[in-house]
Every structure is written in structure tokens, then in C-alpha cells.
Image 1 (cartoon, rainbow, N blue to C red):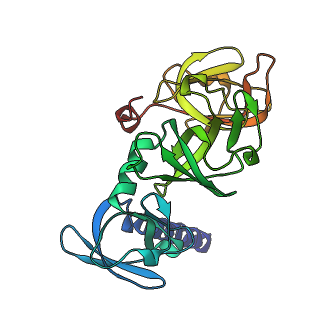
Image 2 (image 1 turned 30 degrees about the horizontal axis):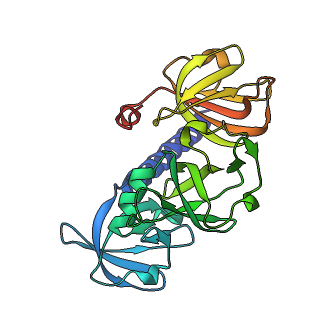
Length: 289
């Protein structure tokens, strides 16, 4: 029996060591805020940069890393020694710190200005993965490269259309959201209408503060003041504070992210496939929520 106790104690101690090791690994690479850097050198797999404090650092990059110049996605080799850039880092495979996003100051300003906000502009080019938009705020403004996903919704007026209905030169109104890398993704695109005429997406993603809760719907208002009513069905997966819940557990003022399917309820509201609710943090409040 004593041997059994010793064996269990040994396993428990080993588990504690493993947990401590994982925790130490997590804290060894904390989240690093965006930083202004100067490019020192560029190779096929690494970029050496100099921070504002004068310390040189060599960072790796891979397929998930992104490089922006004047709003356009480019190769790492486009960045030359001596020029300044904004750097966002992330934790790569094996816990190594890698480049998440490296961009020139103009691109950094554009990303910050339009992150999570509807905008109107001219479609410069498009592919199945990337749309390039010139915001209407001025021809001297940096264009935006927006990532397109299977969840992106496209409309002409209030009618859902395929992405192929859009061509370069079209004036479009877009809803975007920020990605962890700092890039922007395209949530929905509408051709030739103002922001006030934006229909609720029938697929894609919406988020905002809860302003109304009904028996089977939620009304959300985003940071730009645009409201969307989202339906919740028996098939909708609902989480509150990351725990399985029901619509009744969601209260006014919470922040909700809703992933929408292709179906609508009897009133025409898109039915969410997943709804995730959380309390509003100080960081969210600073973003004008």
C-alpha cells in the first residue's frame, strides 16, 4: 500500500512539474504589442530588426506571416535595410516568436483606421483569397488588402450574389474585422449602396453589444452604430463566457459574436449557427462600445 502511495505521489509530482513547465513556456513568450522597428537585414527565412531602444533582434517568418507595403501584400524581400516599419509578432511552432505582420507606416495607419468599421471604396483588384480596395477618403490614402473567406457574404442591393458579380472598378461598401495578425478580413461586401442601406448578412460574421433580447432573436449594435438582428434556433450553439448556455443566459450590454448560416427565420433575420457572448471588457469599451 505504501508503494502505491509513493507511486501516486510520484505521478502527482510529475504532473505538477509538467504543468509548471507548460506555464513557464507560456510566460516565456508573452504577447508583444506592435513596435516601430528599423530593418537591418533580410534573408529567405529571417529578418533582423532594430527596435527603438537600439537592440537588434532576428525573427523568423513563415507562410502565416504577412508583409504589407502601401496596403498591398508583398514578399519579405520588398523590405530593405534602413527603412522603418511596424512589427506585430506572434508565437510560431515550437514556441518561437515569429513575424505576424510587418508593414510600412502608411499601411499600419490604414489598418488601424478601418479595423472593424464599414467603409466605402473602389475595388482595385480581386482574387478568391484577396480583395484590394481604395478607400474613398482620398486617392493618397493607402489601399487595403482584405482577406476573403468562405464566410464572406456578397450582395447587390439586398440580393445575395456570388463573388464573381463584382469586378474591378466597382464602388463597394464593406464590413471588415481585424485578424490576430493585424490584417483585415472581409465580412460582407455590398455594391453601389450607402452604409445606411446595408442589409443584414445572410452568411458570415457579425458582432456587437446586445441592445435587445427577444424569445428567439438578438439585436446587436457594432462600434459604428450599425444594428443587426440575429435569429437563434434550436440548432444554434450558444456559449456564454465560454460555457454552453441558452439564449436566456444572454443579457443586455454583453458583447456577442455570431456566425451566420445561409438560412433565415420567418421575419427574414439570418439564423446564427454559433453565438458566443461575453462580458464587456475595458479594452472593448475603449473601442467605443
